[in-house]
Amino acid sequence: MKRNLTRRQFLAGASVLVAGTLAACAAPAAPAQPSAAEGEAAEAAAQAPAGEKTTLGLSVWGAVQEDVLYVEVYIPDYEELHPDIDIEFLSIPDFADYYDKLIQLHAAGTPIDVQRHNVQRLGQVTSRGMLLDMMPLYERDAIDTSDFLTGIMPAISRAGGAEVYAVPQDENLHGLYYNVDMFDEAGLPYPGDDYTFDQLMADAQALTKKDANDETTVFGYISWWNWWNLQGHVLAHGGTIWENLRTAEEQVVVDDAWYKALHLWKDNLGESFVLAPGSQQVGNLGPNVFFEQGRAALFDDGTWRAPFVKKAAPDLKFGVAPFPTGAVKKSRGSTVCWGVSTGTPEMDKSWDLAKYLFSPEALVSYWQILWVAPPARLSVVKSDAFKNITGLSSGGIDYPGIDSEEEWERVSRWIVTTLENGWDTQECLGDNQTILEREMNAAIESVLVKDSTLAVEDAINTAVENTNREIELNR
Image 1 (cartoon, helix red, strand yellow):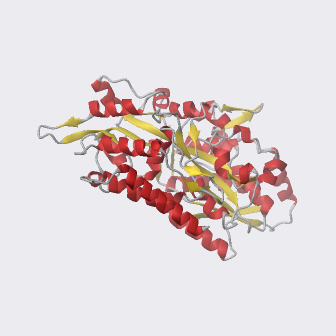
Image 2 (cartoon, one colour; image 1 turned 90 degrees about the horizontal axis):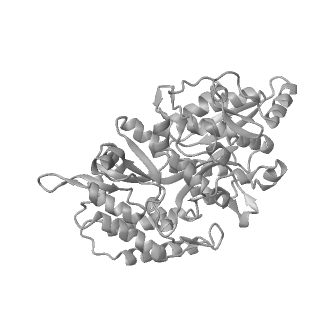
Image 3 (cartoon, rainbow, N blue to C red; image 1 turned 180 degrees about the vertical axis):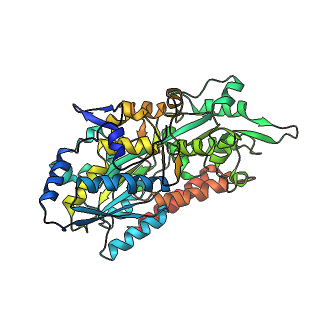
């Protein structure tokens, strides 16, 4: 059932902490009580002179349904708990524009106090001195990092873990989507925890369909043919991407896993693009549309794709499995997190707002309403509340949830399995990720274009050489 948001309803109907363990609320009876820190902040605010308020800036990027969550729930709730605080909300839909704006505001001396970040770009702002090292605050407030998901702390830390520049919100994982009815029709078992790349290739062949003119009508497999997805394959094949990761000496390294990963894509596409459509065939649609329209049986993408597939194709019965096993079992992750500006005049109050945004209560609601990426705390992922995915209907937004236990097992169970086993990793995300991504996207396209004679090894080696050369020039 979709959630119609009202002020503070997410705390009333989500979950509360009982004896240090998360448990789902049976009904939206009474609003959850603020934490001790929040209570102290509210008490201090009540004693402040009337009319004296602190304004804190909060910035995000993302889809409109996320803005509804912040504007209608998080911000009103936080301001109610802290009557001495006014929050100015800045939302920029485009990811690239968002970082341009943050850098401009910092350079102008008017930074946003609390900023939402993706670890892909964290190095871009920490290198400019834009974010506060939170390690002293972590230690002062005894933040329990042992509850964070496996891949998170290395991604938000620097100097060998001595510096921490964010508190985490979630971790998007790489999984394998599959069309349930197509597998049933073919009499094939569904992809499971031990599903391999060899099985992927075999199933792609079995699930491919052609018409009377020998034209492919259903492709066995589809992906985003770019570096963002290929790096997950490299890691699963046992490869290494970075040397001296997230340090001043960071550079790219290449091993056989890189070549194996791109060869698998090339072999899957084939000379005539039978098992999978190439970029020219996909065009501007996006591979997700092929999957949603029943024109592809297998599709690898992140956790955030699931609610959008359901919304776009409500009659499609699909499942999601952990990312296939190669030489090792790994799922490429990417964390969204909260940083505090070095230019904020209100460091303690900004830190309190950041802590609120990664509190268990806030993380539960973020997942239950949006379910785009699992919360950063393993205790939340393992709680009963994690199964209660409501979606939302508010502000003209109709966003689906999960309708049954069977659907949750089929679509979301793999997330818990992946995280409990520590298969998640963010070792692919270096501080020079954007350079490598640009060069490798060009390399991938040059190899996968129809009738290309360029060798996989030559394309990859050139891209890596160009990347390392640019990194060196930028030092």
